[in-house]
Length: 50
Image 1 (cartoon, rainbow, N blue to C red):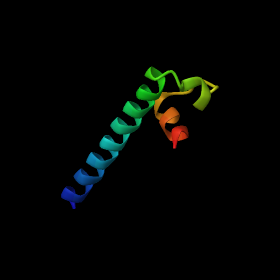
Image 2: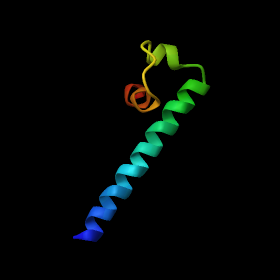
Image 3: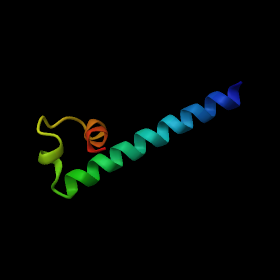
Image 4: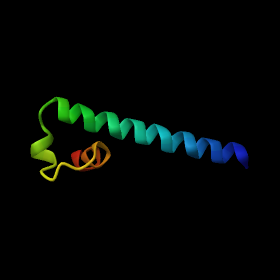
């Protein structure tokens, strides 16, 4: 059972890392104001991007 929970943590960590990186890329590209006018976190920015 421990192996399954470790996989779940790995998937969650990779998802968070990807979402944060995507949000940072949107900001660097200068598209943040068109996607997220409320200036929320990079994670939420990535969620709104899709």
